Image (cartoon, rainbow, N blue to C red; front, top):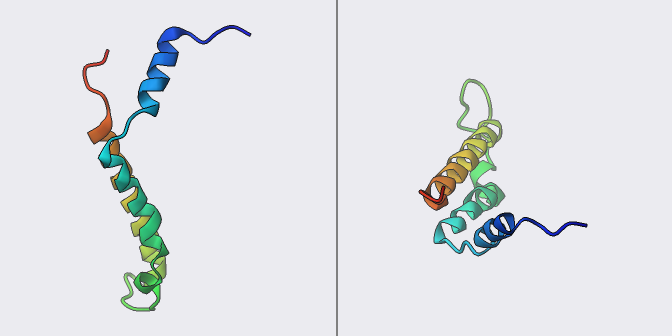
Length: 80
């Protein structure tokens, strides 16, 4: 088996050592849906949908927004 390319290995090592505090924000979309008090009710209804259903969509948007923010804040600029 051939040895990995040195550039690929250096890039992987650099990414593995990324200790940015922005990465802690990725726990938000994991932990927020685990709080039962947020969705343990029927009202308010939006367009006839109970709170549980529209909160599921809100959690998806929260996850996308958080992931995008963390990516934008931690990506390396000018490495190329």
